[in-house]
Amino acid sequence: MIEMVFSSSLEEVEQSLNDLLSAVRRAKIKFIRRQTIQRSARDITTAWFEKIDPYLESYGISLSAKEDYAKLFRRLLGLSTKGSQSSQYTGLIDDILKNFHDDILIPALRYSKTGVDLTVIGKIVSSATAEERDYLDEAVGCAKENYLRAATILTWCAAVHRMHKVIEKIGFDVFSAKSLEMKNIKSGRYKRFNKFFEIHSMTELQMVFDNDLLWVLEYMQLLDKNQQDRLEICFTMRNNSGHPGEAKITEPNFQSFCSDVYEFVFANPKFILP
Image (cartoon, rainbow, N blue to C red; front, side, top):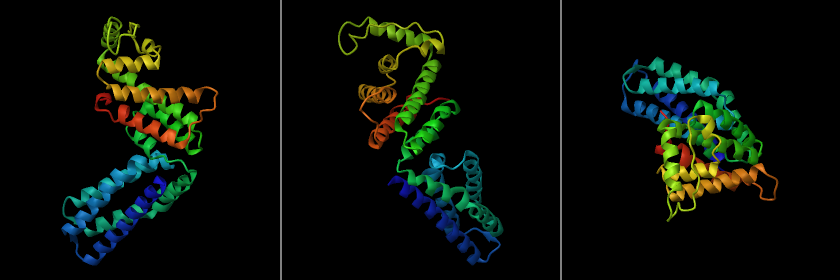
């Protein structure tokens, strides 16, 4: 399970911090300039910010705790870039380890027992805006309780919000003009698209059906055909989740859905917001 890998990463960081603390104390020098110690400190901070920090909230760790530990690890990185007093190292590492079990390790282990892999949706959360997180925080909460239909709907809401904001950035007039161009095409892939949207505001854009939105985004070259096709499948899963039926959302369904939403929307360079 991915949760076990995440917990192992936490334990590895904890052990690496203890090893670093021992190395600093064994050095018995006032200033640390040894490259081996500095490199170890940098490796620990790299592991923290690449493997752990983006996913903490998905594993039940509060935003305030996440921010507190980010500050501590940034300080550790700062010490590793210059000659620093050994007492600074030992004091800082002690501060990190002091409540590490209660603040980080135990909550992560507790949430790892849900049986739902939260890593991919955690990547979406880490790349989301504050407004998108309103949806995603609820989606994560639902996923933790195995309410995957609700989690799917809320995650899709966040994805559509990102699409809307990108269109707003490009210009509603551009979106409108592209939809008119598509309507006038009489052959090829877009020949059956017969709608024109005259959009002047976000409220009007929100009235455009999501499948139509995806088609115009493809025509605007923000998505390619394969990405658009896969996101249409995601939209179908969102609709399945919101209506009665026997097509349940299983964990593999949810992971595939989140992976495509992350790769094609939140990690798509064309959908990055300033």
